Length: 134
Image 1 (cartoon, one colour):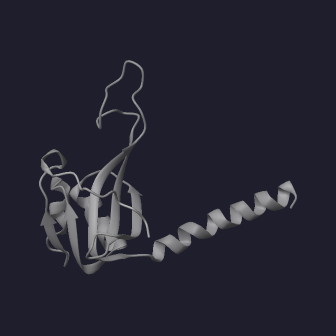
Image 2 (cartoon, rainbow, N blue to C red; image 1 turned 120 degrees about the vertical axis):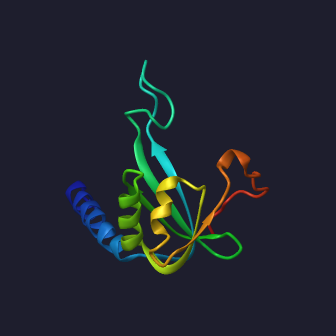
């Protein structure tokens, strides 16, 4: 396969993937948490408040036994309005949303989604088996 053909094929696949993902909706049991991408800038602020980090909402549909089925990453601010928009677009109600209790998830209480709160990450016991894809 020549370079121009491979390049064209790659771009066609990249064009089709978002269209397919837009139709996908998570249902049943969904685990969700805030996630960050990026590193610490020299001399800058460390942690999740660093200006060079991108904020993502990570949501994973799992089976009753905790095995992952589908995953959704959405770059967005952690506000109630933004989480509500995410739920309307990416979650199929009714769903059980499991989170660490971040305040912005309270926006989903009236959206036909049963919300389960968990204690903060530091207080949760570490699972004995790692999460693995089937």
